[in-house]
Amino acid sequence: MKTFKLVIGIICCVLPFVIFFQSCAAGVVNTMEDSGEVSGSAGFFVGVLMLSGGIVSIAARKKRGGAIANVVLFALAALIGFPNSGTFSDLAIWAGLCVVIAVINVISIFTQQFE
Image (tube, rainbow, N blue to C red):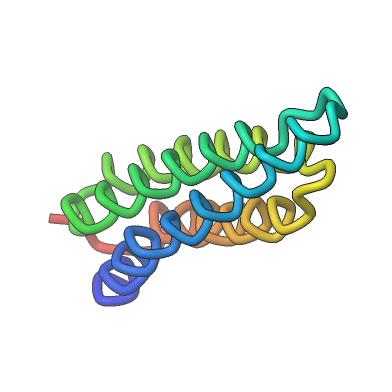
């Protein structure tokens, strides 16, 4: 599980840059269409929370507190991502990924032997 958390952490440190690019594009489209949606800004916050979760996952992969912090970060990212997807429909995919990672961390809290 510790190696899996390291891999998830590395992926979650790289993937937000794709999310940032997409959310900037969605923000520009939202502004040009004057639609009043906030999916671009929500995507930026999801990316920041995912990057933070990736850093915590790498730094504290052997600690129970790190898993708990990841559950909070990724659940918050999902709570921001799902309701605000709007025209930025990929945001629902990234929020779904955050839910999966949060569930994996919940499982690791109860099954992993921590130091």
